[in-house]
Image 1 (tube, rainbow, N blue to C red):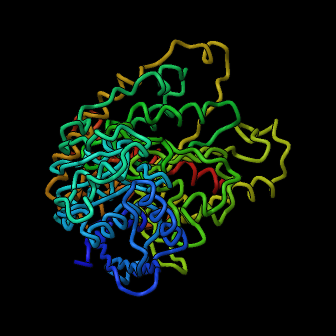
Image 2 (tube, rainbow, N blue to C red; image 1 turned 180 degrees about the vertical axis):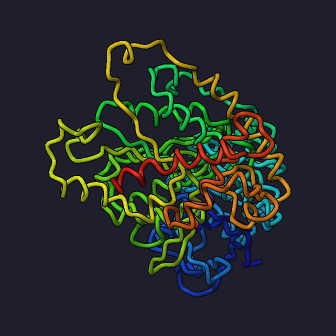
Length: 533
């Protein structure tokens, strides 16, 4: 038999695609032909594979080896297909059997060792959805692959262990058993470890731990604390405006501590993104804590939304998926960069087009921005300490475009303490106390919104707010008047209603009344009134 088959997975963004690897050994002069739209990094695998095979003691034949990666129309990149290509070649030689339905995910070293690769979790999850059950990965990736329930994971350290595990009955040349095992850089009697997916998936809830700042550190700032709690409870976007030293950054950094632990599906998404980006090192368990991204204001648009020369890599908006994206000193960011956030804020995803193809990354995050009122930061109160001209003040805040601000649910003024007694006041509630109310409010939202497949008020669409969840005209009278006078856009109208539902959930009401709608208007219109002044 001169044909061998194996399986692997190619990642496009965070989406995995099951790949069929075919190998054919011809009778012509030695050559290694790789088909199926491989990129330059994948073409380099030819030399790695030949060296790994030689140092395993199972040399590839000195004949024409043709490897086809199906589907041929899908661009493929990276080193995760190394092991699958080698196994398919060995299968074509008759050295291994039973590899047709097994998915192999590992990079090869020149000595035949298996190296870990990024994106194993989304790759295994995608292959499992496509019907694959058995997987072979490096030992460093075993715990990550086993996070997917219902799969069988075989972990190895060297290509010889894999060949031994799938060895064909000894033929004329002795096959795998004829290898000089003294040359191998590992225990020759070692075998593959077997793991059952889901058994060590880390489905328990993580304690926020000492690394998360506590809200009890914030003194005073009752309105800002209330806005932060409302943002956490409903998944709303937040703008904190105030003078330097007022506590804007301090408040924003404490938002993750009052966000509920991620549910199973969200935790799987966040962990998969971390696996693709490789930020957190080896993945051992599901990430339960909401991510927190805080890029510097010098970051480029590509760094924020994603980019790259070929297929675009994920940016900060994707790394903040199901968590918080905090932009400190927001007016200092480039305006095109800020405006690039408008699409993901609406759709929860970002689609990037490049010459090599189009990739879509998830980007459902909470945006928190902090800003000074002017370049010097002192245009607060009567503004007597401000050294900026009127033109400088206006041009500074216009860097935050109207369409972007229209997407921010809460826009709050953070006042500096005016006396020592205020600055040194007794600390407020801890993050744990606030979190208990947030969790209760989120539970009310999930129960109410379950029929429509949603979980937070921050996702409520207009059709529900004017349909099944419509409030009585008395409760929305003032809000309707603002819409009629063009004080609010229709998008702003929707966001006020979303926030009103969250305020009702925080106090245990089944339906927002006029007080909740008025409070939501106050929390949103602060910045608009300030700009109009």
